[in-house]
Image 1 (cartoon, rainbow, N blue to C red):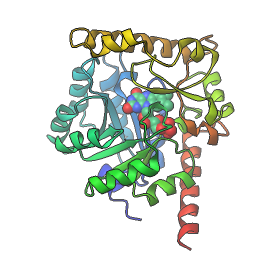
Image 2 (image 1 turned 90 degrees about the vertical axis):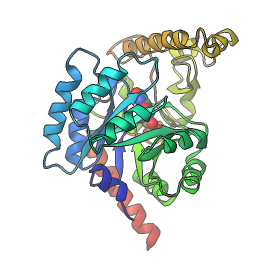
Image 3 (image 1 turned 60 degrees about the vertical axis):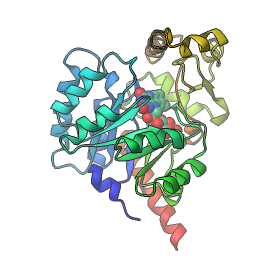
Length: 328
Ligand SMILES: Cc1cc2nc3c(=O)[nH]c(=O)nc-3n(C[C@H](O)[C@H](O)[C@H](O)COP(=O)(O)O)c2cc1C
């Protein structure tokens, strides 16, 4: 299989460790870089003054001579107050590549291309993909049904080939539901140029979340994952704990009206997102009674908490064996 996208992004293997709010951290990025894959993180995990530029400097150091790389996820919605500041810090540090989610990526693409960096845009349907392609995205991340965090409505076996058919020259990364090398191989056979894996890495020793959250990833199965609109306003997959049941799954018609009305839209969305972020932040702390844990349906396949490098090595070995068994 040709791995042109991997070469373009500067990683040895076609595997991206997906950006995860409150989960992704420096140790995970460094382990990914050492493993020859791409580690990515949401810039919003580094909100304290000066934290992001210092981290970027250390990650640039870790990259030198290594076979892996890193990328930064920017939430490009107007409701993200740190967006501009974080974009400036990333450009100053010459971040190798970006993942954009939830808004118009044009500004990030222009800034990245000014120094030769690449931009992959999260998309959940053909309409988002067409907009991203139009403003010059270098690749699309097909966020499929069952993904952890903000999931799309379409299964991978439909969305990935649909994107490849509609945008034949655009690299496509498959995201959502992948936690094993066999699943990774199936995404590549569908036409994906790489895969992005999130949920599997929550159950890693390095992840910045409580042991209870990590163990919940191991203990729960696919039937325990539910979509809720009540955390951020956008459908988000979480584990159906008693806290999740109390939170509920749907926005009321009044809340929907507030998030559509041009006068209230921005402020209402901002308020919902801030409240959701605060709830999630409490829930990742050890021994906290709030069990509000984002995860995708691939929890079904996660059977242990291991180091990032062990997880990557296992995924890649299974991937190799699966491809071999398919061609032989
Ligand atoms: C806990 C958690 C937090 C996430 N936070 C973000 C985020 O901040 N930005 C983003 O673009 N995607 C986020 N995602 C989505 C992932 O980047 C990725 O698309 C998804 O995890 C892939 O599906 P999988 O979990 O089934 O592997 C998050 C996912 C999880 C599980």
